[in-house]
Image (cartoon, rainbow, N blue to C red; front, side, top):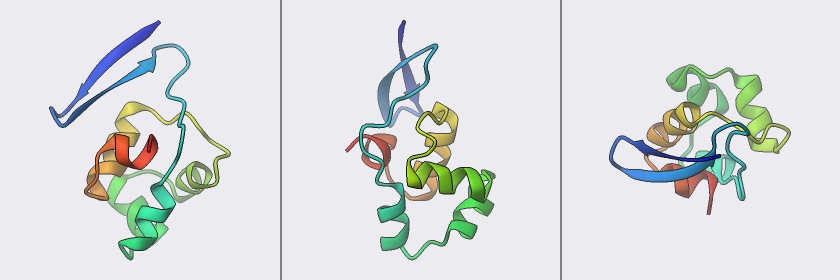
Length: 86
């Protein structure tokens, strides 16, 4: 079942309610490095473990929650779409 979620009026994404979000292209690591942000800094700022962030960056975890994607995107000063879907 598809569900539309409004994230802070910045953007909307469609995701499968039962299966989570399938990331088509994860730009998180490239954006983080370009901005000079360490994995430790991102973890501390978002409250997401370094291990989980590392798995997201390497592609071994591919279905973060909408809330996690939003926290990461906000700290990187990007949209969820830019970080996870472009």
